[in-house]
Amino acid sequence: MPKQQDVDVLVVGAGLAGLHTATLLAQRGHDVLLVERRPRLTGAIRTTGIFVRRTLDDFPLPAECLGPPIRRVVLYPPGLRRAVTLDSDRDEYRVGDMAPLYVATAESAAEAGVRIALGTRFAGRRDDSFVLVGHDGPTRVRARFVVGADGARSRVARDLALDRNHHLLVGAEEVFEVPRSEEPPAFHCVLDPSLAPGYLAWVVNDGRHAHVGVAGYAARFPHGLRRALERFGASAPGLSGATRSDEVERRGGPIPVGGLLRRIGCADGLLVGDAAGAVSPLTAGGLDPCLRLSTLAAGVLDDALRTGRPDALARYDGAALRARFRGRLMLRRALAQVRTPAVAAMGFTFLRTPFGRSAARRILFGDRSFPDPGN
Ligand SMILES: Cc1cc2nc3c(=O)[nH]c(=O)nc-3n(C[C@H](O)[C@H](O)[C@H](O)COP(=O)(O)OP(=O)(O)OC[C@H]3O[C@@H](n4cnc5c(N)ncnc54)[C@H](O)[C@@H]3O)c2cc1C
Image 1 (tube, protein in one colour):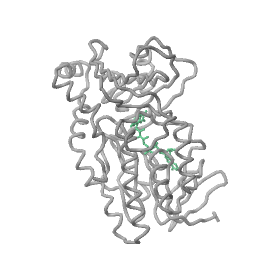
Image 2 (cartoon, rainbow, N blue to C red):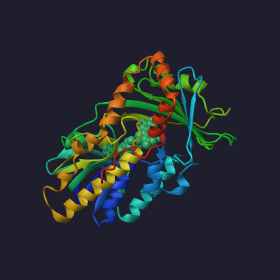
Image 3 (cartoon, rainbow, N blue to C red):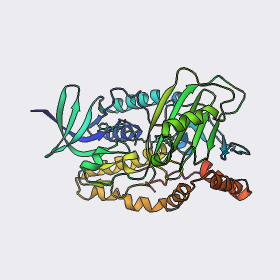
Image 4 (cartoon, helix red, strand yellow):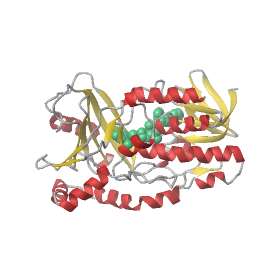
């Protein structure tokens, strides 16, 4: 018979969404168990780690885990000729050094009182408890609430009969150190559907590390994602002559871009981060959304635990929040229709006009990567 323990909240997944939700709940005095199937937080990272200005302004990320500020974005059409360069007079992005950033965030969680079990997989619900499988075999946990912070293909969403992500991109990237150069840190984006169908290929070079990546609709890569990344890596812009070193870290994973899911909470728990579809459908950025939605989730759960009111979780309403995504979802649908290099090249004719440049600046340097769920 598996052992059993009781907690206030079981959080599944120690990505940024799970770590943030767990920390906020523990800081408010609740008993929180955070389980993560990876044995180490420094392995199998699924993000480039680009944090936007709004996140840097609003959340206390450990400064020593952030790369130099980036103020320049360069947009390339297919063939890479006549790129559009956009410069901001503010620090727009910083790339997180994600392995130490996850470790530092987990340390803060533990200091707040979160119990963290690495190498422990959530394996579903049985009767009135949840089954976890770790090094010592299965255990059972009875939790007042469970939080699904278990990524784009959430098992918790399935077990709680909540909505699940169906509109997904897949992305992969290589990360390596680069020598210091005179070039300013920059984010290079290539819009070429033959290379990155439905999204883009990128090089983020902040003068310390280069991230070379590709993402798009899985079924539309003519020779698969890996081959697309190899092809892009062979002629990627923005590396200032730096070559791919032998020490390459590989990252990748699914990216939900269908917008926030409608049903993300029920009487037994709720979803946060990628599990809830909290990713900008247009830019595919999920770090800012996951922190904002986690803040709302922790507030709602705190209220529910304190008051014991059965309707406390009704405030966690994905359908109402989703309505604020309409414009972004329309733009995502438009981007998905760009299927040939010729159409992408036509789009660049618009991007080179003052109106096109100003629209691109609003998307890339704007203040609204994700509607603030708290407002
Ligand atoms: C290649 C790539 C690049 C990206 N780059 C950026 C970027 O630069 N900027 C940006 O804003 N967004 C980016 N995104 C999106 C962003 O990274 C995600 O939206 C964000 O990291 C989601 O965090 P999360 O905590 O919800 O999920 P995750 O970070 O995926 O964490 C989920 C965790 O749950 C664990 N888990 C899953 N199932 C179980 C289980 N059954 N039991 C226990 N644990 C489980 C997983 O191991 C994982 O650690 C990128 C995504 C990809 C794929």
